[in-house]
Image (cartoon, rainbow, N blue to C red; front, side, top):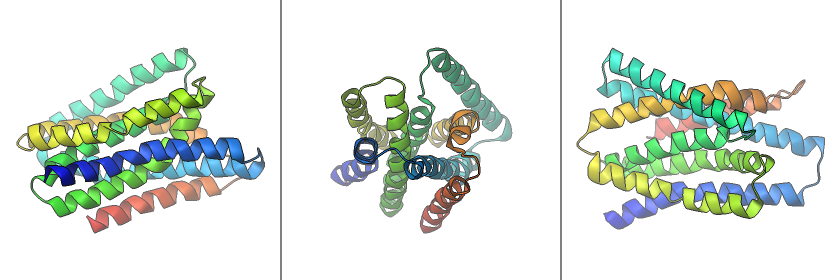
Length: 235
C-alpha cells in the first residue's frame, strides 16, 4: 500500500518538474513572436481555470462538508489575508512568484487530501493523483517563466522545481499517517488554501494572462475549468 501511495503522489508531483522543463524548451527553442506570446498567455489562463476548478470543485466543497459557517469564514479570510501580505512583500522586492505560490497552495493541500483518502478509498486517490498532476503541468509552466523573469537562473529554477516535485509525496504521507483521523483539520487546511488561491488569482494571475483584442486567453481559462469539471465528475 505504501508503495502505491508513493507512486501516485510521485506522479502528481513530477509534473511540476516536467512543466519547468517544457517551459525552458519553449523559451529557448521557439523564436519570439506574437503567436508565442499568445500561447504563453493562453497557457497561463488555462492554468488559472484549472486552479479555479480545484478551488470550486475540490477544496471548498470538501472543506464545507466538515466545517460550520464561522470556521469556514475564519479559515478562508485568514488564507486570503496571509497571502495578500506575502504577495505585497514579494511585490516590493520586485519578484513574480504569485503563480508559484498559487500552485503550491493548490498542490500541497490536495496532496494531503489524497493521502488521507488513500487509506479509505484507494481508487479515488488514483484519480485524484491524475487530476493533481494534470493541473500542475500548466501551473509549473507559468511559474517557471515568472521565476526566470524575476531574475532566477534556469538552473536554479529547475533545481527548485525538482525539489518541489517531492512536496506532493511529503504531503500525501502526512495526510495518510497523521490526518486520516483528523478530518476537521484537513478541512481547515483546504479552506485556508482556497482563500489564498482566490486572492492570488484575482490580484496577480488573471490580470497577467489577459491580452487586448484576443479571446483565446478567455477560452483557455474556460477549458481549464472544464478539465476540472471532467476530473471531478470522474472522481
